[in-house]
Length: 152
Image (cartoon, rainbow, N blue to C red; front, side, top):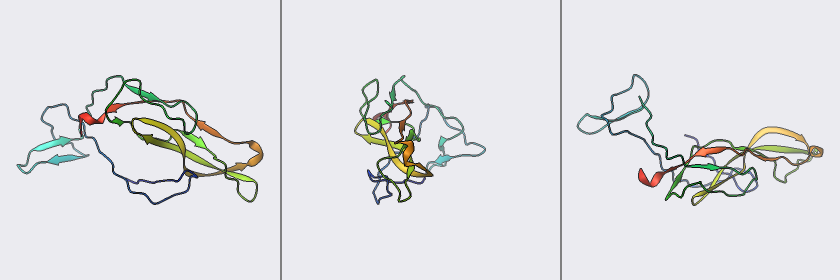
């Protein structure tokens, strides 16, 4: 897994990251997959298999509101928010290159407690004329939320 950290200006920056990885199971004895991931205990029993991907979703979600940097929380309270990671839009910020062009950045997810927002992250490699204006587009997408405190 590749983890990248970005400053508020969208520049790569050094950072430490602690990440909780949540593995879902449905309580049945797992059987090893033909391909994928299997975890075995010291007795040689398969304790996790990626053959199936069970997860109980309580119809909780968080909806990005379309404004970069504006935090929003889930529709139901959780102790510890967990959501899928994805790109949620694009943001130019305020930087202008010497030739009058702006850099278009992918917008990633920033988390603060149990709230999230979309914000400028990784440079997309695309530039466009400054005269086109500032692009700040966060997709008003709803992502499923689970309370990871149940699993960790």
